[in-house]
Length: 116
Length: 111
Image (cartoon, rainbow over the protein chains, first blue to last red):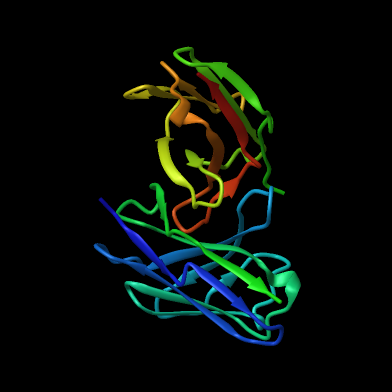
């Protein structure tokens, strides 16, 4: 079945550091990938839509200069949290869909980001 | 604003019984409907998806959709302790859109 790989699983770093998270579709090509964020005891919130070969589309309230998204190939999207601060600590999860654009999204294992 | 509402629970169900999870959504333009299961500290796992009004069955799971009432439900038959998790309802407007999630229902299956 479709597999989405996300790396790293855990990141602990100091305030002010920039952190890059990778999302790969392992056995299919994904022109569109999605990035979500989940705070403790909250649901997943869509941050942005990553489009291969073009600019990402950000949801209202998400700073595009802080959360840089690059989708340079059909199997890889990256999210860079620039100058991360403690309030950016969260569970970041990517997803991609295979085949029918309206079809189900498969999620990566997520990246738990802790900013000290 | 798109909203997906779920009862947060916890919903406690005896082992072997039917667990019934409900979800309502506000965006009438929603076209695709999904149920995900999320264990604590893990990412969501797809359980079911449904596009058309009516019922869709897959093993012990049945998804039900009523677009007129803007209502989606998930039935889990012969509930097992391993079904204990948070169940997330999600909707999608169109192919290029991401998912809008509810806050999830915490389900506990009592042995």
